[in-house]
Length: 177
Image (cartoon, rainbow, N blue to C red; front, side, top):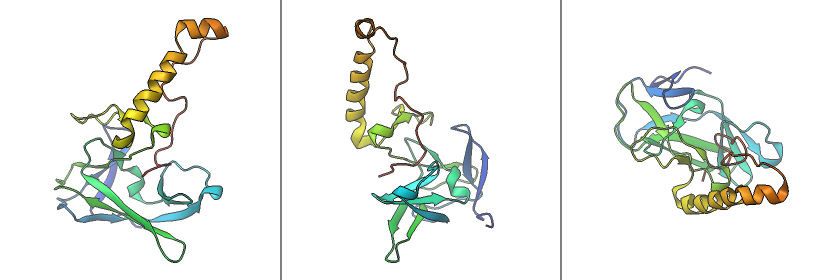
């Protein structure tokens, strides 16, 4: 697969690898048409770079777009849908002017069940990669989990519970909404 002409993968300050613009990209401009393989839920193995299209359809990103990181203050968004032939399509679209050399990001909007700590560094960072509409549910769940890890609770069970906030390392795109 040939590289996309207006973006490149680089070592990101946000997380691992990321994608930067090679030229200025205007608001509403399509940054990339995503190359991918469609999977059904029962076929899905490693979904680290999958976009959730709908309940039974995932698009496994196989081009440079798979390295686009999350930000709580993104400069791009995903447009995606299933097609009439049982496939799916997706594209990355700028939501504001993106300058050459700027990292391209979008909001992953994980469900609160899959939320993970955020390292985007945006001034308005919520601290979590989670759908903003589910932030209250996440806060309630974390409070319940913290209460269940209290010393009194651990003493009654005779166990010391793990301090992990979400209980598991989560997938990059398993449940985008």
